[in-house]
Length: 209
Image 1 (cartoon, one colour):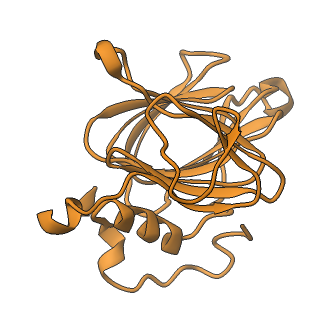
Image 2 (image 1 turned 90 degrees about the horizontal axis):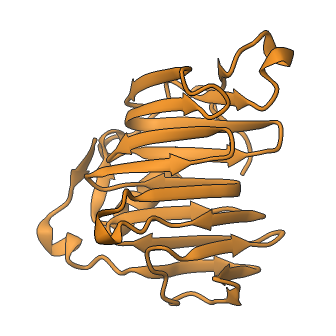
Image 3 (image 1 turned 180 degrees about the vertical axis):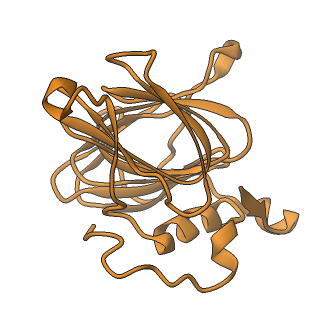
């Protein structure tokens, strides 16, 4: 779903914190750009904080007021990205991964995705790739998506009864941009399918960061 750039560029992938703005912590310790981040680490950001980081061949943009626990698949345990709170954009290399949110689980394989966690709902935009979305309140409620350019944003609701018993509901694309996805993929030597030519986004297709 994201094409690989030449191997020489892939070999130049630099893990760790690429940019740090405001209060950013790894396992509770404040960090600056260049700090190491490993699988299994917890990254938190305060008000106004933001971080761009690379772990393995995955890249992440963590926005303010977020708590994220990054995948650790040692000893054959399933790799899980835990989004406890806040907002995160992620691009992933090949291989299976599960994303755990308070109201949803998402099974993915080499995708670009944007997530937001609020007490009343969880927002998911599968920017490109394949994923299976499941409600944690009702695991039988699931949806398989295959997207190329933000076609299927979804909200998971904490109170489905107030939404006409809808655990998963269609949503609009908000708060993220193609330029951010292109930037993240470039950090790991890749380019999204839509990144090789200009994309004309519909007016009002995304909100402010």
